[in-house]
Length: 129
Image (cartoon, rainbow, N blue to C red; front, side, top):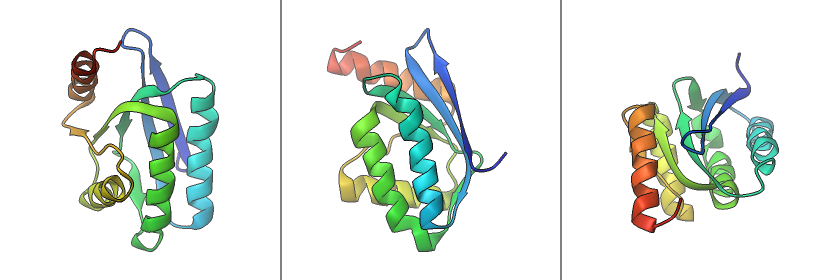
């Protein structure tokens, strides 16, 4: 189903796996997409580590700047360590642009398992749990 983000809490690794099913085309789409993250993440009351699976996610170029701002707010407000899996080349470009503009994460992994390994390594390096 499009226009929905599937969230799964991985209890054993204390992280969230998010799979957005979206084609972001308008400012209203950006607002609704952001709201889905905000609503879900506020329930944790802390920044969470996250794997974002992008198999079914696309952004239209005309809305990329507004999406990049909203994406940065998600990472600044709700996430600590995070990785993306399977972005299209366009999504990768927009993620990297948002990352540079707003100094937010752009890490990418080849699989969910690799992303989890990356998050666990980042925790060890930062000496956090």
